[in-house]
Image (cartoon, rainbow, N blue to C red; front, top):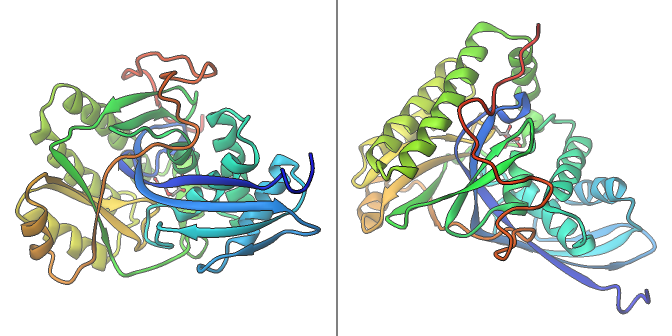
Amino acid sequence: MSLLSAEWTGRAPGRVNLIGEHVDYLGGIVLPAAVDRFTTVRGRPAPQWCLESAVPGGLPYAKALGDELEAAPQCLEVSSEVPPGSGISSSAALLVAIAAGLRPDLSGEEAALACQRAEQRATGVQVGVMDQFAAALGRCGHALLLDSASLRYRLVPFPEELVIAVLDSGVQRSLADTPYNQRRAEAEAGMPKRRRHVESEIDRVHQFVAALESAEVGRLGALLKASHLSLRDDFEVSTPEVDAIVERAWDAPGCLGARLMGGGFGGSILALVEAGSESPFREAMGGIPVMLCQTADGPFSSTEEPLSPRAPQELLGPEDGSPRWPR
Ligand code: GLA
């Protein structure tokens, strides 16, 4: 392959997680969706890895992914609409964009797993596979129900009458500076409060999917609220700033429910808002930045083939996504 013909472009979206927080690294079931904010990476082979971006800090991620993919060094130009540190997974968008550009021959699962390992290697944070999977395989008009133990997944239609709102807590943080690994270790050790969150959250994911599929939109809000309380009280990953915004959103017009989203300790809040109520909702949130999103396609999602051959479509039922506890 000549250097000229080896130029490539990759693009991948940010993600939200509708429900199923802090369960992916325990083999639980999660319901993220890719959203319409994208990172685009243009690359070409180079004597050593380099990366140009308005956002600092991407180079270790790119190098780590290069190692995972056994790729020769590349020079990368990154442009992104995914705000860093705000909880919609700018790192997964960057990594999956690079994987999609460098190795479009990979399956979505292979790409997601390589990106997960690269993120763990670059940051030391033992993240699960949810963010990379959603950025790679999310589908417009859908959420992605993923069993993070078996990696079986299926698409769940997301109702047109709902708008996804992402609220910025203003507390930007890198997960490496939070007790994320500690929470993971406590959960893996079966600490009772952590375990209670994980078990109840997995149950809420099943209930949330059932409510989406039976068009009982009203039930979604109660599940989001219960998820937040569990993250706050049992998993202890919220902060007073986040709690205040979540509670304000609960009372805002058109808002079905809201909760802390992602790793926690700051970052962002997810709210589901009835379409048509965006303006009063935004107004009620005062000066808190509100980003309205729609679901989007990940680069490894194919509209021809509903599912990759490596993950045969099967209904994920209540027996799926059981947490792994120590014996
Ligand atoms: C971060 C990680 C994910 C997941 C969430 C919490 O976003 O990257 O793997 O663990 O936190 O649900």
